[in-house]
Length: 137
Image (cartoon, rainbow, N blue to C red):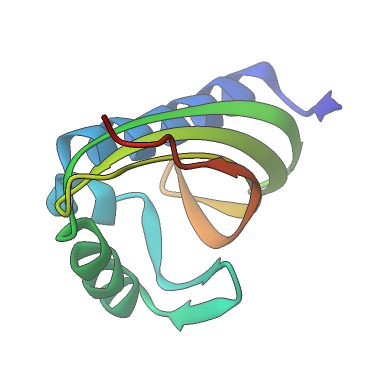
């Protein structure tokens, strides 16, 4: 279900793409720009509070990867004024520094806020839907 002004829904889709682009480039500076200062990130049961802590946690997690392909597909966005909720499906292929590969399909439940004409994540909750680790050659 998608509801709300199309301009806001497009801007939120661009927020998701900015997030994904920064993940693929492993760019903490750009990735940090999508979060509010007091954001909440729940990642498979681990809760992190505040943009600074969220970015530090992400940098540590990304340090274990040589490369990542990350795609996100908005599957629901509802905009009411300067607030929005949504779901975003993800597909990730990760080349881990230990030489293994992980493939994960996941789902984000998002809360977003609009400040000074820009959308930011105020809360993201991620859960794995399916995971596959192919046998290494």
